[in-house]
Image 1 (cartoon, rainbow, N blue to C red):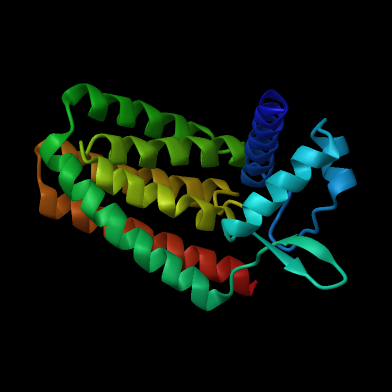
Image 2 (image 1 turned 120 degrees about the vertical axis):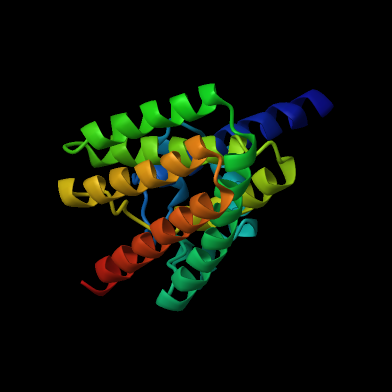
Length: 216
């Protein structure tokens, strides 16, 4: 009995991870209805672990249950998006400031390499978005502060609800690439104040672009 429960738990966790990935990659978008049968078929899972995964996603605030409709991926209001970016700005500024103090030369080199890949991914929005996530995670990792990293992870679920990436055209990717270079220059110089200011400017630009996309 215990072994069976453990197996079901493991399958439920696998279903949860697959669903998170599908949402992150845009297979399912905010506002989409998640039908157990359809999700199970698309992700090659059985319905029981899918049901377990949907319950966990609901407890995480990613999915909401609507009467007569069922499980639906939450959509953030404009106010919620602004609130989310306000929190991101605080964390990203702090991360950049701490990275300027603690990042090694090798870590900064790795961030520069990632940014170069972002700059070259002008015809692949999904790749640019994935690289951008790795870039920002790299900054958090270089802070040497596990509590800041945990705080950033706590925002990950909310970030999934932002919808499609804003890195959908060459001009936008170029702006992100250039702003990343500003952050990197401050990290290389070990200048916390400048690094924090550059990170804050980057997030403000991202918020303005996100709101423009929402209002289009």
